[in-house]
Every structure is written in structure tokens, then in C-alpha cells.
Amino acid sequence: MRWRDRYGLRRLRGPKVAKFDREATDADIEALIDFAKSRRGVEFYVEPETFATDTTAVAVADDGEWTRRRVGSPAVIHKVARNLALPVYDVQLTGYPPRMRAYNERRRQEPGGSL
Image (cartoon, rainbow, N blue to C red; front, top):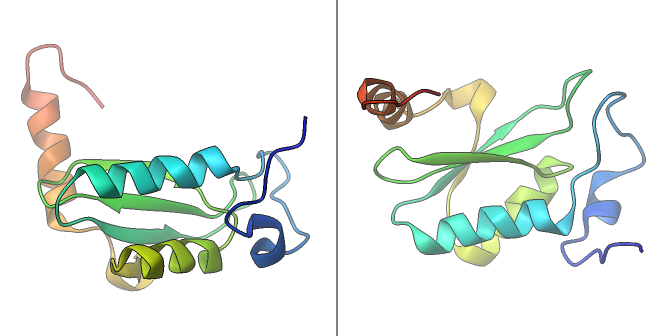
């Protein structure tokens, strides 16, 4: 069964797909939207496509909690961010926010915690 193209992934992405990766799906985009709607202060960080992976976006909440999903192209996450009135940054220009690293460190220090 073919998945719906609710977010314009096919149109906004173009024909190219990274060689070893699967394409972004509506479920990937919906996971980012659900994360953003259920947390405060979310910002999106776009990660470039590589040989092995498709373009991804990292959603980072104000406490540093984060999630990463495939988005197909920067245009897709820009559209989602615009609809949610949230900022989106190019991680190659801005880097990751310090709160994300602090969150990872807190998780590592928890009993049984690892990333």
C-alpha cells in the first residue's frame, strides 16, 4: 500500500534519494509534529543529506530533549515549522544548542542511562 503524501514530500524532495537510506514518510513528519506539540520551546535543526542518510531534522525542546527523523528535504521541515510557528535552523551554520548536549549528559549520568 502506498503512503499518502500529506506533507508534499515527493514534490518538495525531488527525485534523488540517498543510496543506502529509506525515504522519509508521513510518519516521520508526524513524529516531529507530535514532539513539537507536546513540548515547550521546540526548535528544528536541519541536517544535510549524506551518502548514507536522507536529509533529517532534529527537534529540540527547551529542556534539551530531542528527536531526529528523516524529512526528505529542507523545504519539508521549513513548511512544517512555518505551520507550527516554530524556528528552523541549518545545523551546519548554527551547530546544535548547548541544552541538547546538557540533556544527553544528564541522561548518561542517570542510573542505567545511556545514549
